[in-house]
Length: 366
Ligand SMILES: *[C@@H]1O[C@H](CO)[C@@H](O)[C@H](O)[C@H]1NC(C)=O
Ligand SMILES: *[C@@H]1O[C@H](CO)[C@@H](O)[C@H](O)[C@H]1NC(C)=O
Image (tube, rainbow, N blue to C red; front, side, top):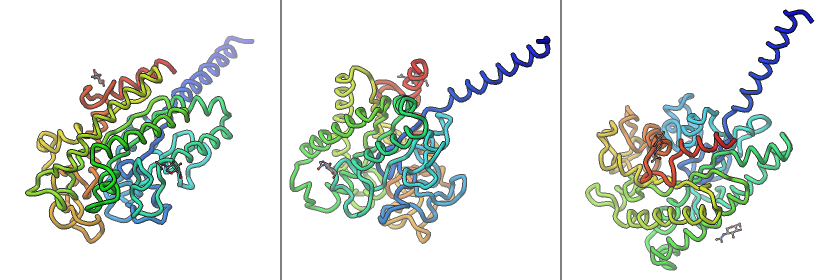
C-alpha cells in the first residue's frame, strides 16, 4: 500500500467518523401532549369547532398561512424544537408523519382537551389525553418497526416530552356556564384535588410509556386572558375567580411533580410555572416591549376578547407589541419569552431545574 493510499484510507476513515458524529449528534426526539397552547394542527384532521386552520392564523409564520397552530406564527413547541436544533414536530394525524420523519418526534396535542374526559365536550371530536397516549404507544410500535426495538426504546428514553393541560378544565368545563355540572359537584378546592389526582395517573402513565424527561406546564393566569377580561372581569382587571383557580392548581401541580420525582428517585418531571412567566409581562408589559397585555391582536368586542379570531375580526398591524394573539392564546413573541424562561429561568419559573440544565445533564449521560 502506497503512502497516498494510506492517506486516502485515513481520510475515508475520518469521513466515516464525521458522518457517525453527525448522526449520533442528531437532535433528540420531541413529543408533545396537551391542548391548543401546543397543538400543531391535529384538529385540522377532525370534525371539531376547535380549529385554527383559517386566516389570519399563521399570518407571521414562515409560509404566512394557517397550519392549525393557535398563534400568529410559531407556538411554544416550535420554538423549543428550534432550540433543540430540530425540525418542528408534525401533528400525529398528518399523513407526512412517516418514515424518517417519525424520528423527529410527534405532536399528539389537540385543542380543547383537558385532564378530564368531559372537558371540551362542546368541541365534539377532539383527541382526549388518554387517546393521545394510546397514539404514543402506536407511534412507538411504528418506530420500532423502522429502527428496531432497542433503538426505538433509546429514542423514547432520550426524548424531551412537553405536556400542557389544565386550563380547559376550568375555562371549558368548571366555569364554562354558570352552575356547570362540575361546579355543582365540587367546591373549587375539591375540584382541584380531583384534577391533580387524575393528572397523577396521566404523568405516571407517561413514565411507564418510557418518557424520562418531561416538561409539565401549569396553567397561565386564566383570569387575565382577553376573553375573561371581556366576559367576567370588571374595568380590565383580571377575573379573581379564575385567578383563584390557577392559584390553587399550580402549586399543587408543583407538589405532585416533586412527589413523582421522589417516588421514581430521579428528576424526570420538570414543572414550568406558566403563571409566573406570563404574569411578569401582564403586570409590566412595557418592560418586555409590549404595548398591551389586555387587548388581543385578533378578535372583536371589548379587548377583542369576544368570539373567534376570523378574517372578519379586528387585526392589529404589529403583532410583536401584543402579548395575546387571540382571546386565549399568546403571540409568537410572547411564546419566545416563555420558552427563554423555560430554558434559562430561575427556580421560581421552573423547578427543580431549568431546561438548559436538564438538557445538558441528559447530553452528558447519553
Ligand atoms: C377517560 O376515558 C378513558 C377512555 O375511555 C378511560 O380509560 C378513563 O378511565 C376515563 N377517565 C375518567 C377519569 O373517567
Ligand atoms: C438556568 O440556566 C442557565 C443557563 O442557561 C444557568 O446559567 C442558570 O444558572 C440556570 N438557573 C438556575 C436557577 O438553575
